[in-house]
Image (cartoon, rainbow, N blue to C red; front, side, top):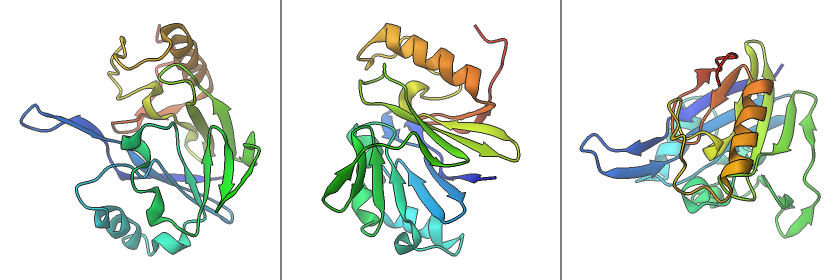
Length: 187
């Protein structure tokens, strides 16, 4: 089974109430895959390297970067992982070569489109010992996600993506918050 760990918990607001769109940055390990999800904006990119160092990893050890969608706050630090392949909506990048986006990155990591927040959102469904974890970017911003996403490109598609993620996942890592358990009877 794969392992998922939050490296840096995201947020949408500072303690003083000002906006801060730092995404949740996660680490997924499965066999020979060491993947960082959404290496986005930080006041200091060294914070992400320090979190990896705490797990005895360096940016060079990361062989995949997964981008849930193409908003700058989610991909700002992708260059920190210059040896990694980048998996995003349009495909799998290996330096300057683009191949088709896989539907299964491994037996325990499934990739699926989840449009609505924007048209190129994707979600990683990761099978772990605790259940299926959906790492879905801004399909859900936080556990108490804004039902009316002010940046949604298509509210109907977003509602359908949210429903699908909640049906398939036991846990959700949202775009800007901590992991939470899915309430299966949630409407």
